[in-house]
Image 1 (spheres, rainbow over the protein chains, first blue to last red):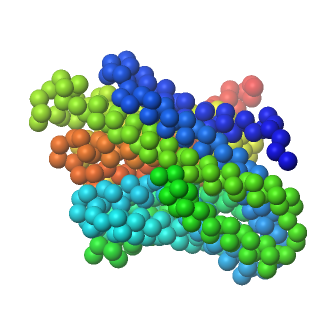
Image 2 (cartoon, helix red, strand yellow; image 1 turned 90 degrees about the horizontal axis):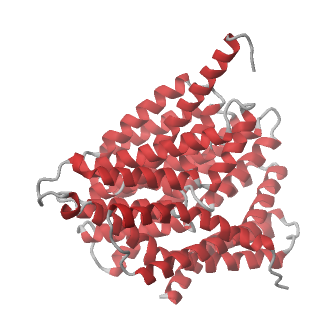
Image 3 (cartoon, rainbow over the protein chains, first blue to last red; image 1 turned 90 degrees about the vertical axis):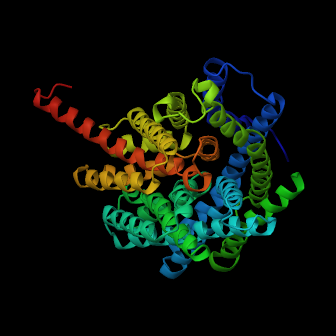
Length: 246
Length: 253
């Protein structure tokens, strides 16, 4: 049965809250600083509505479908107490949620287009799709590894700041070797990965894990997984760059 | 257009579905609570993603590029074609700053993190204070990122300098705040902000003479993720210092 309720509209309000500040700043600049009308006003309005409704549906769908399922499974694996299964699940969770991250899809496509325009890759549809897919798979792989490492960190209680500092060092070293044209997108991929799907799923895993191990503070140990997930993609994407454009 | 995006999206979401189904059926084996509701959720996710991606192409990407193009137009700047210096681009920096500030202040994920932070710190860090600290971090980050694109300096110089500052700060920061500070960098960049910043950066690199979109266009998102770490640790210092002052003043509330 389909019964509309108030909680159907909350995601719409949240999506609106996400969009309004952006639109506000853009409109302010367009009207008062630049003093120009918005070109293609109708098309922009239509696109904004699509973003609004799409984001609301997406978030609502996550709330009723993916999150409860993911959380109950994360708890199930923690209770099961089998480390190999838990680690495998962590890796696959990071991988699968990142492959489906909408902003990563959009950015990878953009990056492929720019790389083709600049002649780094061939400007055929096939090559661009392959490059975008390769980029996304690389980032997804790295987030999978990051979640795996983050879970190991919680299990063995490694201090977070040493892990992060080591990660930063690796980023710096990789930057030395990576081709210049991949560095920008590599650095950006760290911030891109951790948005709508990945953050809640991964936080659920981390907090569930930390609260079921004795002597751990769920709030302190639960955090920190995201930090790994924004560091490793930089390193992996630079490796990908080395591999495809030596 | 719609069908193609739908097919691509189905392909993108399939791995998660397969993963969850496999583990649920073969490894964990318990029954699924409310399967119809979960299926409906997945249908929403797929349709929502299709609309969102189509909308990005129609509105958000063009808007970002349009703003970049207009704000760097020599006619708007009131200068000749080739005499643009970094200080002529004041409105670009103002736009970057405001976009960073406005989007982050309204970010729902950050509100949740702020409330958690208030709880672990016993009130020393307020939810509102954390939000402001992160937002200012993002705003400064995007502004410096725009400046970098305008001047065409190497991205890695800035990022490595930022890392050195963060590492030094980490050694002096209160232990409790460290995981939170690192995570706050990641949660700030929401699904709408990321494409907009990418479009803005690429637009700037395209319209400023002598910049290449490939080398200079990316990086704004990286700036927006690193700088909040600094401002959050700085905020923790300030609130700790204030607390100590208050205690020295004779324990007045």
